[in-house]
Length: 387
Image: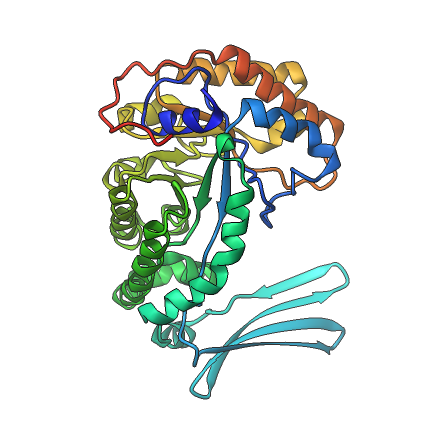
């Protein structure tokens, strides 16, 4: 099996020749990670990954959320020793702004939406739902994406598109203390916004699926509206129906979906069965999270491939022998189940210590030797894997 065949067999809950390993960084640079392919310190990791890991080349194609008459501007100025950057969102003579203030080593951040009046303004903004305008925006982004797609060696894995979910815009705009309260006091108002954003998402997903732009889609919204930040009931209304529809849309085109979730997942695990992704990343055991792999397999009954989980900090702290022991222990816990081994996060250290790199290599080497073959006890009822 090459990495691509291993990836799609795993996401179809089928056995593989080696346990699949995903290191999270893509082939082309993604801003949240080091550019592993070109960074000299990571070169040994990248070279070994080509033979012993799967690669998902995570990209995005994102049109403007709001119509063109919602404008954005930035201003920078100094005030009482502070360096201030404000980013304005304006519509029909009104506006709200986010702000960063820095002075010496101190930084203060103001989110875009902080009180009920600002929420009323934000949720009143016209979402771009014109199919023609959305597709024109995507057409402008498409050549750069197709260039990267042509450069990506398909045998390494797959292109993976992250196109967003309705919750994303409000979450990153909002003061999160107020956001939690709004889930109770302004629920219907926020659902109305999400319904309008979903109109755009349907068009964006169809655009990409109809053009066969990727074989895997990555959904990252579920961790943005879940306990303990909001109730499970809110999760079931703000996340589940939208994700379920988008996943069904992807599945109709014969493609796969991985959902991403950090944190306390145990209470809401059954809701992932309702959403029905092919893979779920990342299950975190206590004390970081609240669910072991064993507990997750018991709830999900091998219907979803679990992806995880050596904590990122352990790549910094463990010895090579300790990393090998941790990998073997995790593989023992997960043996017989549909599983992809991964760190909890991708590499973001620009100046990694030697131990960090050696632990990546030990991670890959141990998984390759100890995880062969990777037999899934339960026979898959899925259709054949994409290869």
